[in-house]
Image (cartoon, rainbow, N blue to C red; front, side, top):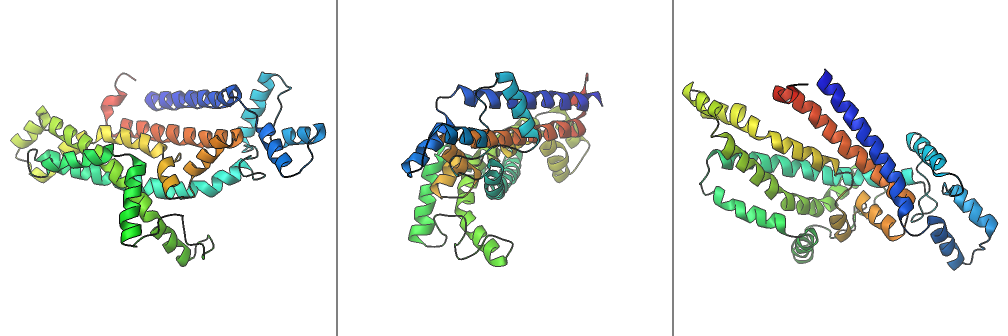
Length: 329
């Protein structure tokens, strides 16, 4: 029990530290979101005076005249009540609304792609590592080369091959504009069709790392004494592979999967840009380009929650499946 309580306490402190950094870093950056918004208003012929400026400061949660401690307390209160401010880049939409609209796209695309790449890589790595030196083992360098290829180059290559030449899949967007977003079968099938190329890009680029890591751990695990003992007991190869070798070799992959799953929330910015996919990565890039501090803070907050939450779950899961991690706690 103490092991689990210590883990929860550690991640609670880490979350508080991340919130504090999320508050401090944007205030150290040059630029001011109110000035940017007023400049846009002036370009459109609007009137800019002291009253208008104060109104926008209040609208955007600006309180630069107050002590930093009061700003920090107000920031924490807003975070825990879901008041993340107003987005400058998509003014006057609240940050929470922008994130809520973009997050499901990224979770479905990057999340499913990450899970598929992990499962395929781990299973293939276990099979290849079980019999090293076979013809399957010789294919691993090809997968590692694909992992080293930049996302944008691989994405452009897939677009040229499957969209331009063959015309099988659309090259940009998240769904056919003739459909209204919703739970209709037409929209769902359209969204799935538009997601195939981005998902394929992520899977191809990441499967090599999972495969190589699992293969190397399998080779290392097969030399352990408990594997020799399992053979001496006369256990079947299938049981040794699944219950002994793969079960122990997969532990480092579980930790890597937690980190990857946590970063699903941040999306694959390059991939989403190439395919003009309406995910959270595109919103983050737009926020950086427009100095949209409120949106950046909101997205970073969700990324922090996702990463810490995923790692906490895996740490607790580790304590269940591997009692050695609880030793001394």
